[in-house]
Image (tube, rainbow, N blue to C red; front, side, top):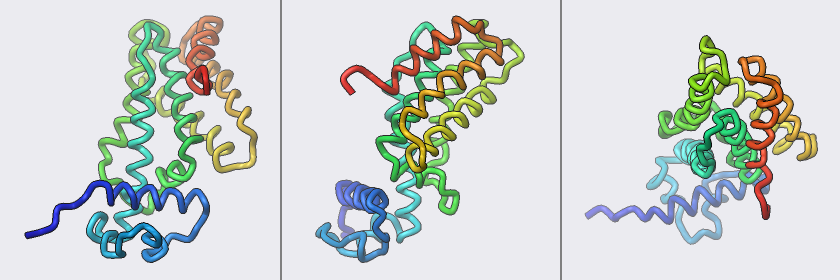
Amino acid sequence: MARTKDPAVRVLLIERAAHMLRTREPITLRSLVAGTGVSTMAVYTYFGGMDGLWQALRQEGFTRLAARFATVATSEDPVQDLAALVAAYLGNALEHPDLYRVMFDANFDLEDLKAADATLECLVQAARRARDLNRFRLAIEPLEVAIQSWVIGHGLVSLVANGPLPRQTLDHGVSMLTALFVGMGDEPDRCRSSVANGWKQLHPPGR
C-alpha cells in the first residue's frame, strides 16, 4: 500500500526553500532537506524533483497574493478598491520578497495557471465596476486598466523589495495611479481622494 502523503511535509519544504531564498543560501537537493528531518526522496515524492519544487514556489507566491487580495473589502468606490488592490500587491511583495522574486521566473511553469490569472482578474473586476459606474470612459477596456495598474505596482515594488530605493518610494504610487485613472476618464479631485483612501491598505492601522 502506498504511503499517504503528509501535506505538512510539502509545506515544510516550501517554507524551507523560501527561507533559503531570503537568506541567499544556495538551494540544492541536500541543502534543502538539511536539518528538516526528511530525506532527499521527499523532494521527489512531493514535487517530482527540484524543478517541481520551483514550480510550487512560484505557485505559492500567487497563492499568498490571492490571500492578500481576499482581505481587501469591496466598497462602493471601485477606484478606491482598485488602488487598494495595488497597495495590497505591494504589501504582499514586501512581506514575501523571496517568493515575489520567484513568482515571475518564467524558467519554470506554474502548477495552476488559472489560479495565478485569478489574481489579475481581481483588478479587472474593480476596473470593470469603475467603468460601469462611469468613473472610467465606456470605451476603456478593464483588462488594460488592470494590466497598467499591475505594471505600476510591479515597477515600484521591484525597486524597493529587491532593489536600491527606500520604502517611502512606494507612496509615489498615489500620484502614478491617479494620473492613470484620470487618463481613463475619472474626475481629478475625486480620483485623488479615492486612490489615497485605497492606498491606506499599504499602511493599515496598527502595522
